[in-house]
Structures are given as C-alpha cells and as structure tokens.
Image (tube, rainbow, N blue to C red; front, side, top):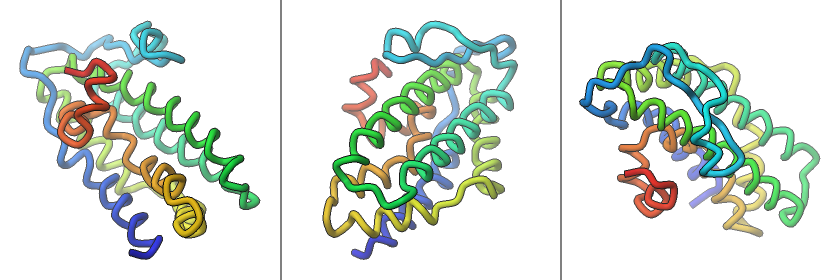
Length: 185
C-alpha cells in the first residue's frame, strides 16, 4: 500500500465521520448554556472552562480545534524533523486534542438527539467546506515515514480521524478499549 493511500483513507474517514456517528442520547438533555471543557488530564476535563450556547457553537468548537490541531501538526512537520524528535511532539499533540474532543463529546452526550444530530451535520458541513486544512505536509510526512517508521506514520495519519473522540457512539464502535479507558459508556 502506498503512503498516499492511507492518507486518502484517513481523509475519507474525517469527512465521513460525522455522517456515520449517531445522534446523542434520547434523555431530552438540553443544550442552552451547555458547558464545553478542556483540561490537562481526564479528571481536569470534567471542569468547565467555556460556555457553549447550542449545537452550532459546539460544532464550531470541534471544527476549530480540528483546524488548530492540523496547523500545529503542519508546523511540527516543517523542516523534515527526525522521527525521534517528532514522535513525542505528535504524541503530545494527539493527547491534548483527544482531551478537547472528549470534553466536547461529553457536552454533546448531554444534548437531546436533535441537537446532537445538528452538531454532527454542522461539523460535517464545515469539514467539507474547509479551505483551512492543508493536508500536503501530512501527506509528505506519512510518505516519508511510511518506509522508515511505520508506527509514526500511522500516528500522524490517526490525527485525521481524531474528531471521533467527540462522537462517542463512533468511538465506542471503532475504539472500544479507548472509549473504556476514557470512561465513555
């Protein structure tokens, strides 16, 4: 399999992710004044740090975080760093954004099914219309490391589907052990 093929598959997964994810719970949870959280640890992620007023705002938070993560990754890849230098940086980047997406997912999980579906459709719409995400650096890095450090290439590629952490139904289906590790039931 060429290096480009995994990147293409990852991009398809990113764009298809919100379409596949199911709606939120049917408990009639409300969204006005819902709280999005971020934090340095799983426990800290339960502490509110920002207010999100509705599903469209939460979708924008998820999208903005995804764009910011991709910009950080592109900056890390500048100058063709060695795998040994890049690996801890990519791991840190992934961990930081997993926490952000899980925090957003916890807010989404409290929404009623209509609002949760709106979050999905808005994220999907923004991703499809996204001129802000440039995958050239990612593709080049994956191609470069695919022959010398497959694990790093896979870790970089996995960042393309990191928004799955905000859509718990999908995360539980695709990464059940990871969902359990994060306390997502």
